[in-house]
Length: 59
Image 1: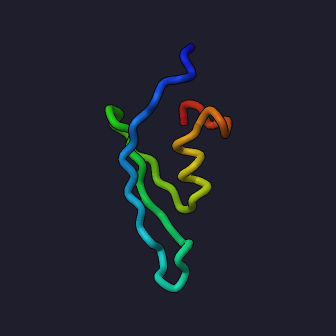
Image 2: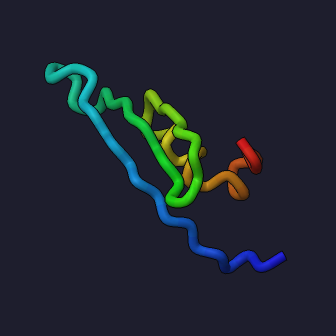
């Protein structure tokens, strides 16, 4: 398996609360894929975009 494959994503990030600037949520779409994945924190966004490094392959 080639580990140097680069994936492209469309990421929509929304602020959850203007009083809490680090509060975010959004949607991630991998280009060419039909499914969308939601996230409610920067950590979840990182896990979606880096599945091999976080052990979430195929999620």
